[in-house]
Length: 92
Image (cartoon, rainbow, N blue to C red; front, side, top):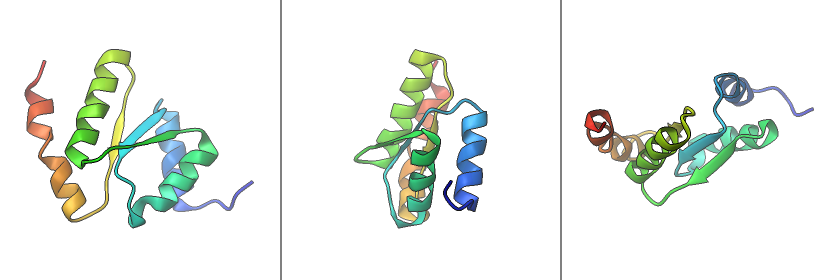
């Protein structure tokens, strides 16, 4: 069994909530989460833009009826992701 880290605990919480896929752009600060997700069987799906990753998560959730998550690095990654939220929030 791998060493238990904060990343493993966070990923296990996602798994308990039914998360099977995480949409992202992988960066240095979230690499421990990627490793932990592999151990727990959660798939990270890499996009080309953070906003696109959130739209992918939204589409996945709408089509499958399952929860989806977007995880991003701080700074510009987070800022780019936020740009997708108004469209997702207001769409039906």
